[in-house]
Length: 249
Ligand SMILES: *Cc1c(COP(=O)(O)O)cnc(C)c1O
Image 1: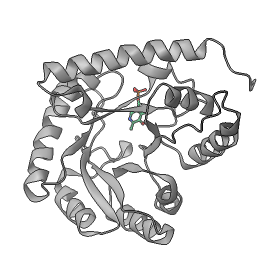
Image 2 (image 1 turned 180 degrees about the vertical axis):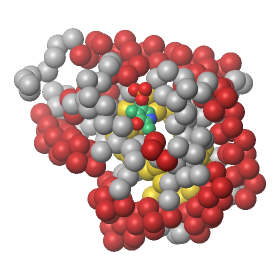
Image 3 (image 1 turned 90 degrees about the horizontal axis):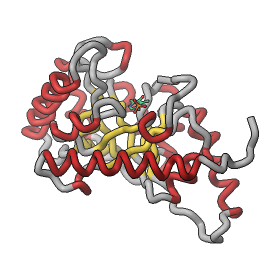
């Protein structure tokens, strides 16, 4: 693969970003919400670090990635390429959102660089992330608890029955900050049915954790539906960056 910049890529991303932002803004307005109340997380997994640099240059402040190894490689590339910015200005570092299924043995690494983790789905992972935060002597790590809406553990997420205890654990740990719930809609179910269920769970969570006001839901195919059910963080990959040749999950 060539390391040279694809001349068409910036224009492509300008166009797709404008379209997604317009749809997001319309969806928020239709739901009676302010457009700024929805954070666009650009999911760049499987795309090169150069795409992240372009998006950041276009004002995208939140980047979503799902594999520790891939993220560390891209962060190193971004740091290495920064002094060559034509403007001479150091670019703002984007906020890094970890959105993939996370092995407990990778939690220390992720706790070092992640600004947000969307996929806390079991007690051992919450414990490991908190230990990583303490080791790194960093500020508390904001996290979403991921819930499985259909009980299929293959795509991550805690069972609904285990959700209250996991949320309590996260909220009680001073190294973590409970933002709210995250979910991926089950295969073969309409997103509106899934996100309505998520919204009910999010409301129940806020009864015991009033600060957990965020909700991470919505991907390229269904983000407008997710916004109508209260999503505050949409995770959008292919609608911005194009089709992934390889999916890493
Ligand atoms: C890859 C991924 C996305 C983005 O999916 P698109 O359909 O490309 O927008 C969102 N959320 C999670 C958890 C993902 O793994």
